[in-house]
Amino acid sequence: MEKRTELDKIGEFGLIEQLTSSFTNHHKSTILGVGDDAAVIDCGYQYQVVSTDMLVEGVHFNLAYVPLMHLGYKAVIVNLSDIYAMNAEAEQITVSIAVSNRFSVEALEEIYSGIKKACDLYQVDLVGGDTTSSQSGLVISVTAIGRVDKDKIVYRKGAQENDLLVLTGNVGAAYMGLQMLEREHQIFLENPEIQPDLAGVDYILERQLKPEARKDVIHYLHDLGVVPSAMIDVSDGVVSETMHLAKHSEMGCLIYDEKLPIDHETHRVARDFNLDPSTCALNGGEDYELLFAIRQADYDKIKDSEHMTVIGHFTEKGGSLNIVQRDGSLIPMEAQGWNHFEQN
Ligand code: ADP
Ligand code: MG
Image 1 (tube, protein in one colour):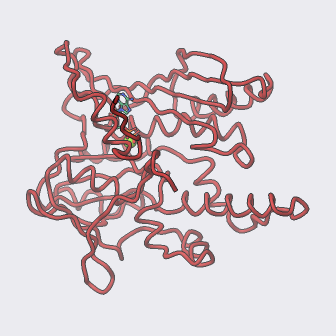
Image 2 (tube, rainbow, N blue to C red):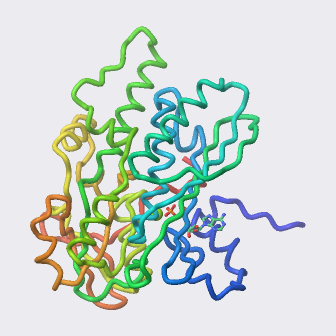
């Protein structure tokens, strides 16, 4: 009998590994392939970085409550975020879409108005893409291309013993925004007469629907003369991303629960939902903040920044990965990030 392995047996990362591990590179210019936020290509005196992300209707977004313009904007942002996570400057994007005749020209123009907004704000150029039909939902795939000086590139690997773990902005907000949108949508489905009650939650809704990428932080670090020893963007949650940094760097790591930056609105709504705000901050996804390691010697340079919080540090080589809870006890980090193939 032919062998058949179900996708949910190996998970997303297992699948990528299984599909790509037999490939070898043919070019010296391929500095880094699969496995980081972006691929790294030697293009002369600088490195070029390339990253792709796909958004699929019904998996990544629900058009019942995601405005088309926001969708276009977010599709660009999530890709730029991966470029900034390499400490690079994003310069170009390509955009590919698959659409069914359920969508009008005007609807697609709405999506592109969001794409244009992001291009204008982040100063990136739309340079191509592909357009095709789809039998079911809408698919948007964006590729982003950037550049960085060779001595400034930052990978997921590179964190050293005693490096500080630094997080930009605050976390858990996009996740709470999604919970709020999902709840109001369910209420609407059950009773279309009831208007959604979204008063007082503007911040978390904006974090979910119209996230920003931390280009400002890349510039800020550059101006301070700080090059992180390792970096990743927070798409799947702080714990999941910290585990990537630690694994790639082969270092142990501690996160201090009490240090997690949580906005007061996120905190309040989490409580309303009977959720632990810390859990939302540790495991909620889609904040698109940057998470990076810096040498202790660089601490003085960043300590006054309102953008950055030290949430932990790397321990010894091969050490364990733990969260220090408020009572001082340790719990092991466990990735709660999205696994696309897991059955609910
Ligand atoms: P991110 O969360 O930063 O978008 P992913 O988890 O999507 O990164 O991907 C992890 C790594 O695997 C990246 O280097 C990505 O380019 C690569 N990758 C993902 N899917 C595929 C695929 N189908 N074929 C080849 N490489 C892939
Ligand atoms: Mg990433």
